[in-house]
Amino acid sequence: MSGVRAFGRSDSGLAVLIVVAVTAALAAVVTITTLGAAAGAAAAGYRAQAEQAGWLAESAIAQAAAALRSGALVVPAVAAPRRLANGVDVATGAVVPVGIVAAPVASWPQVVDVPLAAGGNGRGTAVLIARVLGPDGEGRGLSGGADLDLLVDVEVDAWFRHARASAAARFLVTETEVRRLH
Image (cartoon, rainbow, N blue to C red; front, top):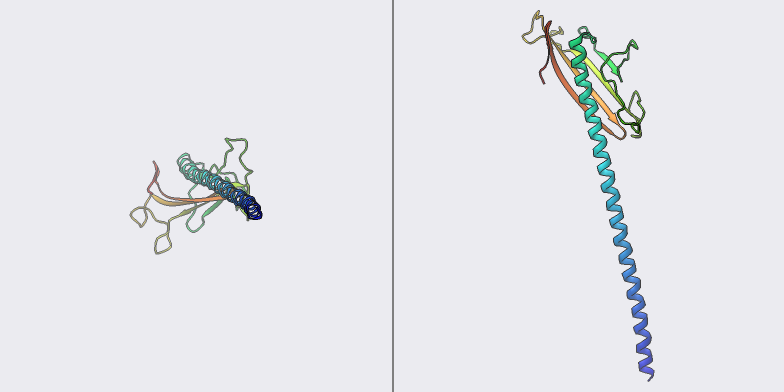
């Protein structure tokens, strides 16, 4: 009889060990699944922020084209590029309709002049508008020399929360048109 009791005791001990092992395995699976879901949500959030930053950059390029066409943005002088932060000329403080960051959604983060160092909750654009220079340091048109047409480069750095995006375009500016070359 004593052998049966010993068998019964070890059997219940084994059952307890099995329950503990199964519980630990289940807890590990739940933890891994939760961490995976959190990582997936963070990645999806960053992708959405990156898309917003990309749209801000492309919007600033479109605003530059429109401002050049309307005359609201004067082509900068040779070797005197214009730097804009969220639609304000950094050197003069004048408001220019390029790189202005609208807020179509009330929950968008605040507009800041530079991306926040640790990522964070800011949004904005930095735009550089410059004449294309030739090898002699003079402003260039399509065929070089004393062309009446001008080549202008626009470079944009945009940020939205933790994401950043850049865009660049070259425009041909003539008396009658502004055309994006690339």
